[in-house]
Image (cartoon, rainbow, N blue to C red; front, side, top):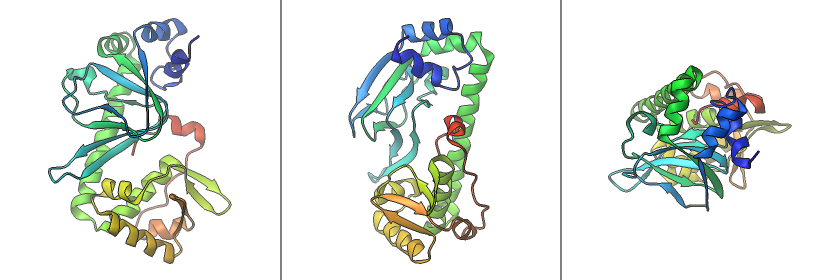
Length: 245
């Protein structure tokens, strides 16, 4: 079996398909490699394919009217993105960019539609995926409207813990490396503001920053700062199905 086959089989949406069915899906799928900073697609590109991250990490974002980057989420290996094309085949609405060297499998829209028609669980899975992502975007929009910069940053850190948190003797390490600018892009703030807020949280003993990685040293204190329960940290096997934040 090819490497492309195994990447498709590892996607939770396809894991219940037979080897023959996955092979049929693979027959028209293509793999492309992207270097760090290279664009996978642009707004207005035709949405003729759905994409699966085979390796690396992809970020999705909009560019605001004032030229700022509004980050929508990160796609990890085994995750689908660009799924809206399954339903309308319209143009892309966001940018997709490789954060590091990445391999992406593109699946023709018609091919995936055929699988969805034949297998209800795939159709339901994609519908659920879209619903979860929409709910998270709506929640982030409310956060931008009604919360302070500090509250938005803390809520983002709690979301990142759920997806990327790893327990260590010193605390909970975020396995993803994000710059202050990238954090600012998510919460609709500035790099300078995020730098100040992270410094305050570090002085308070809630976290430590080392080489662009964040270590949460006092999770109860961090969660209590926004009247939120501490997030659940799933085991590695459970992260496979976790939606992008």
